Image 1 (cartoon, rainbow, N blue to C red):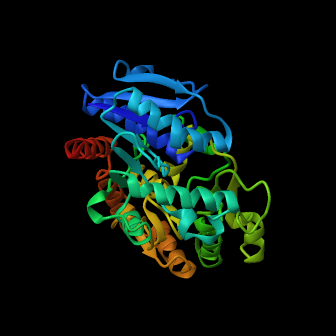
Image 2 (cartoon, helix red, strand yellow):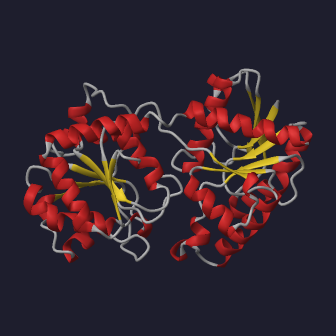
Image 3 (tube, helix red, strand yellow):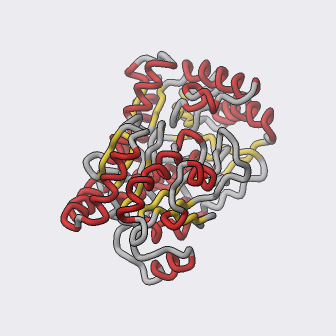
Length: 379
């Protein structure tokens, strides 16, 4: 079977779509050696993927800028699929062609720009969202990362249920519980203590960092000195309503500054050491199509205290304490218990590893391959 993959984001590993495309291609090549994967990307992509050969053919097509991206998605990619005589096309992000030249699978990770007002952007962004909402109707099959996102797609894009499949994501192999010799040095370089509660992620408004900080209005007096709150990630360049500066939020909420430590930025290679050293990971996000940070924490054996909305319960399962996103006091109570109750924390550590083991890229690749085969049989 020949599968043409839109590889627009191949070189952008800061984007979730780029990470998803890389991991999926890698594991598809591993689970099905006879699968021929054809990467179609704009001119100039690096294509550092020699370890996938001979299963991957590297093909470049012109395309640059916002208009070039739309042209690539709607014209260049479907033309390339036809010219390559591919059996099925896969667009690993929400941008399938309006007029596909061959049966096309699209991965819709989430509907954030459609559902959340703060993310709708200006006229061009809204036009693009309307375009891809329309083009999704012509996909042979839509994949998504969680049952929560699948429900959103059925409700808001009105696709038939049989044409939408939830295939969970997984973590990178570097997230595991066994400490590495350099872990202590990495944490020391970031100025971290031996025990802390960790938030690691973005600062846009849906991440709800305000509640993260509010937990230490209650938890701080009880555990803040020996187990401070660590806020890690690249802080916003400007303090805006869309991405509020957490330092200002901490001051406004009256959180004792001695209870909070800011770490910015954090290299990808340092993240496992930060997860492994944490007593708990806090994640009160208001909306996630999947939510990789809590799964990364679980894979490192760290329990999660977070929100009970969207896809977070699917990812965390019983390996954490999940509450309404604004229940800072309840989350503070859970953090205090994890910090002081060794038996409870040990049980949650065990559950974290068991829950993380349910997710794998091998499984995601196998289920994606099954989706390709369904689409090809329908032709």
